[in-house]
Image 1: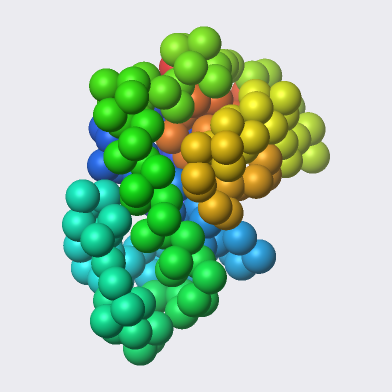
Image 2: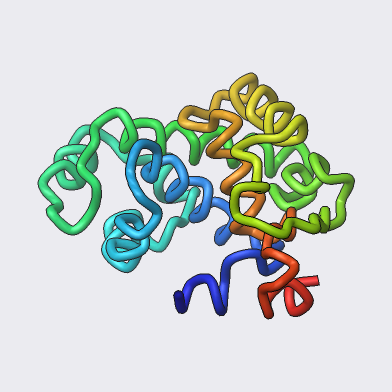
Length: 173
């Protein structure tokens, strides 16, 4: 509830935080977001505060260290994907000047505001998230399917998916 009331849907333009959310969304695949949130501080510590310049240099010892860390989700393929994603993230940042500029292009550089009335109205993916997924995959990212990309868009405020009846809908504009 605190996450919903303070973070979810707030427009985010900080590259390091965007990387953090992308990594966490990848770890969430197949699990509940609540599971990831409970372990978020452990993830921050384990992944050097999601510094992509550091994470991209992780080697076998770091993977072994992460696999022993009971405070995070210990999935080898997701850990390896996070390391690869750090390198891909840096490549995009170098090409576009910032990851923020790159990622927000999928919504035309501004928040897309939806007008959902019921939770059942919310989609699990959109054409924008499918394009984002395709482009990220082409750029070398892993664990970035259309559903993960849409969850990332929601979490980082690229789309405002708070229900019209939710007090956060207007606050997150």
